[in-house]
Image 1 (cartoon, rainbow over the protein chains, first blue to last red):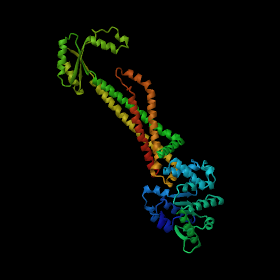
Image 2: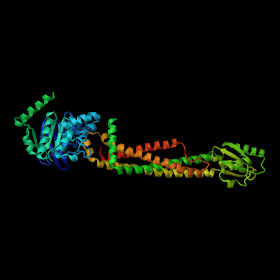
Image 3: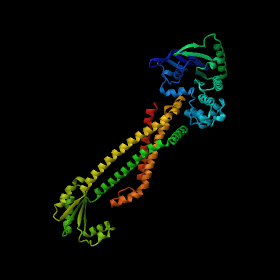
Image 4: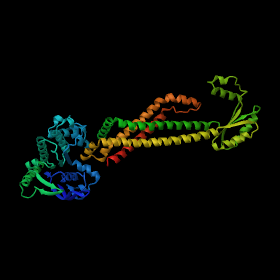
Length: 241
Length: 293
């Protein structure tokens, strides 16, 4: 469970987030919708302790992220996979090496790294690009590599900050299918986007943020989306068990 | 162990990608260790010279030609009463000639026409207290059969002063070079950190600990230290057989410079340890300064 309680984030005199309350149960897929500067990225950064709230509390399960000791931050970040608009791939490493990177950081043996990284590449259908460098990939392939890296540690949470922002429509849909697949395997997915075509086409929860405040949350009782989402979550939990 | 290997490979790749940065750090540290090694050898040589003169018969009293054996014994007994005198020795004219011939065996021109009659007999007095040399010299001068008294006090005093000055100057220069090495390592590692900022950012995002991010840079600093120390000693060992005979000849018969390989191994060991300290410290400061971790 992810919980934001009365969270505010102020930069100088401006509030990026203001007194925000939000709950995201395990296994949910949430779109964070809003214009640039609405506060979507700030919310994601608070989850991985890249930023600290000015007020309020951010909880990830039993962890108080806002007051987390420095030595526990790397542990938190291993539970969370992150995907960015600009992919953030290491240009001097191959696709395989980029995907294997988090596994190296964990200190796994080479044989385990190879097996796990190849599984992640299979998930995103990039096995034949394993030896390529990021400069040799299309935008869609680069983002799929980024997704593979984000999920290689089988994180509980996947954060995606405008993952389709630099992609053509077809590649964007491929990425969305992958994220839906990742979600179906049990990870909570939180995706910040201003692409309304995507958000209106998928039955996931939509949380709309404007000027640092939640103005709309489709997860209200009785909404069609809420019912579909609830059914999907139930199915996901059952398949995990 | 696998993790250390991995981090060492990362450090090696970074050095290979930025060889000129590495060269700058290595050259500065090389200079530090090379100069340091030279000063160590100079210091050792100074100790050898001082020790040589301290163990030589420190006061020599030359005797008049008509001095009898009884008078010589009396002189020896009188001077032996001084507590710091450890030994007295009579050198006859013939013995003096033998010593002279041995010292100048390579200079035949100096051996021509020299006979025992020309060289004076002497009494050599050894002592264990430098401060008493003057007292011993004055005691000998008061003997009527003594024509001249020579002692190494002035030489030793001068040597001690020169050695102290050389050591102080050496210490200052080497300290300055050490500080420069630390600063240059800090700058070079800092440059490498800025070149890999993106990689570091991603490392932190995927859950790398501070130690994981920092370690390759520390290894890099240590590598600079080790390579510089090895290079400095390597070049010194190559040059040593060419330089030491010429120096040795100037200071004959004093065995001025060390010939035992153990001395060089010890200097190498000490410099590699110092290289490890300088390299790792400079790199650590750079990671604290530029990584904000």
